[in-house]
Length: 360
Image (cartoon, rainbow, N blue to C red; front, side):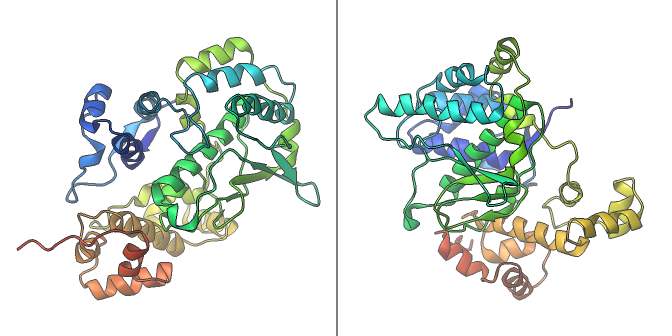
C-alpha cells in the first residue's frame, strides 16, 4: 500500500495543543524531522502541504506522550500512556464486535472508578426502531458548554471518534460505512476539516457524541489474534490513519483533484472525467447516484477552502478573496454568504478570529 498523505493542517492542530500545554513547537518539529514547521505555513505558499501518515502517527504519539494523556484532555480525566495497549489486549479475544464494544465499557469503567469518577455502564450502542442501524455513543467525553467549544476541541473530539471507528474496522477486517455523526456543541464552519475524518452528514448541538452504521456489523467476528495485535501496536496509531474505504466516493476523488488552491484554473467537468479515466457520461451518472453534481462539489471545495483561509488571523478578508480567485471582494462576500448563509465578517466574529491589520 502506498504511503497515505495527511494534510499538514492536522499536524498544526496537534502542535497547537502541545503549545497550549507549555511545550516548544520548534523543538517538537525538529525532533520529528519535518522538512517544514506546520505552524509557519505562509499565506503565499500552497496550503496543501502534506505529511505522511507515518509522520503524523509519530507526532500523534509524541504529543500524547508529552501531555501524558492519550486523549489530549478531551475526557473527564487524563488517560495514562499504555491504556490503549491494555484495552486492545482486553478485547482482542472477543468473538464479535458487539462483545468487544461491551468489554470496552467494562475496561474503561475500571479506569474511571479507580479515580473515583462515575461512568455509565450501559451498552455503548443502541439500535434504531427497525433494528437496521446502530449508534455507537462515546460517553467519556466532556460535554462542553456552548461558549466553551471551539474548532480545536471539536476537531479533537471528531478525530477521537474517527479513530474508534477505524479501530472497529481493523478489528473485523472490513470497512464500516458511517451513516451520520452526532457532536455536542454548536456548528463551527470548517467542513473540510470534518471531511478528513468523516465523509457523511455531521449533526451539531446534539446530546451525545456518536456515529451510526449498519447494525449487522455488530455481529461480525474479530479477525485478529494477539500476534497480529502485537504487530499493530508496534506502529500504533499508524494503521488507524491508513484505513480507507476501498470503494471510495467519487466526490472524494474529485475533491482531491480540485484541491484548495483557487488562484489556478479549476478543471472542467470533461477534464475531471479524463483525469479519473472514465467517460463524462459515467461521471455524471455516478455523481447523480451520490445525490450531487460537479457544480455542487466545486462550490463545496471553494466554501471549505474559504473557511480554512478565514480561520487564519494573518489574512485579511480581502486577501482571502484574492486567494480564492475573486477579482472583487464584494463578489467573494456574495459567494461566501450563498455557501454558508453568513458573511465572512460574521464567520470571523463567531470564531473569534481577529482581522489582520493592513500593512502600510
